Image (tube, rainbow, N blue to C red; front, side):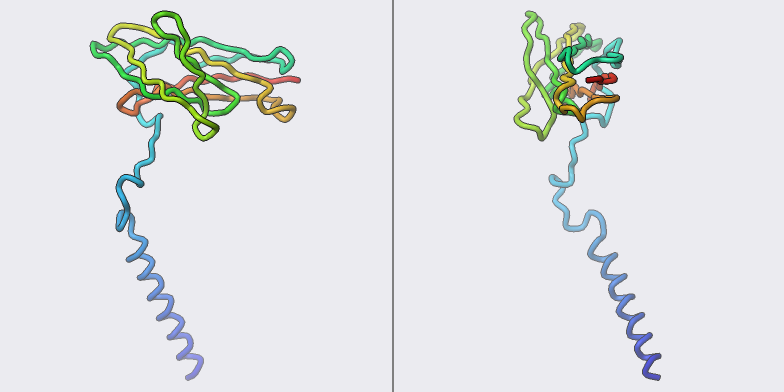
Length: 172
C-alpha cells in the first residue's frame, strides 16, 4: 500500500507540474508586445529592384586584398522610397551607398560588430542608385580560406529588404 501511495503522489505532482507549465508558459501571456517584435530585414520583398542580386568572384587570393562589386538598384514605382538601413551579414563585408552626386556614403557593416550608421537616404520614383559591396578576404585571417557566402541587406522604411549575395573561394 505504501508503494501505491508513492506512485499516486508522484503522478499527482507530475500532473500539477504539467498543468502549471501550460498555464504559466502560455504564449502571449504577460509578454510586452514591443520586446516581442524581432526586426527581420528579409521579411518581405522590397519594391526596389535590381537586375543583378548575386555575384560570384570565383577564386580570389588573400594576398591580392579586397574585391568589390557594384549592384544597381532602381525604384520602379511612382513613389519615393526611404531607406533607413544598409547592413551586411559579416564583418568581412562592407557596403557603400553611391549617392546621385557620385559620392559614397558608408561604410555600412554587420549589426553587432561595432557602430553601424543609419543610411537614411531616399531613392526617388524612377531613379537608380548603386550599392558597392567590398569583401576583405583577410578579415578572418588564415582560418578564412575556403568558400564564402555573404549577404548585404538594403532595407526600406516598411522593413522590406532587397538582398544581395556574394560568393568566392578564398585562397592564401
